[in-house]
Length: 123
Image (tube, rainbow, N blue to C red):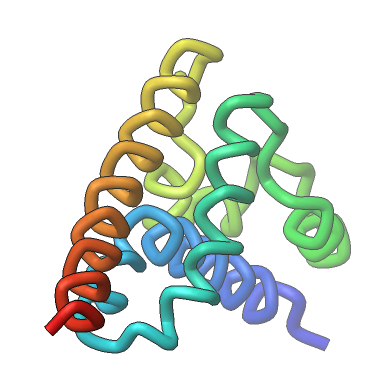
């Protein structure tokens, strides 16, 4: 089995999750049903940032090892998307800052959604 392809797919899905957790409230402005998915993704991503949980995920590590590379070395680790998903110098304070930015962005957007919903109900 080609674990490299699976590893790349998992990294890509991880990247999409990070983007959705951060910016997924924007589609909720138009499609409110997406809000419920994003409201579960965003707190998870922020909790990972605040707790400074290790990345890559266990699935990604397993796939890299099955491909025959050490975690953090080899062709998988040279994937161009990896620096976006796993910044090398992401310290505790940076994780807290990123989590707070995500929190404030999402709270602001959902506040707007709630305000519009209340306005529509009152009209």
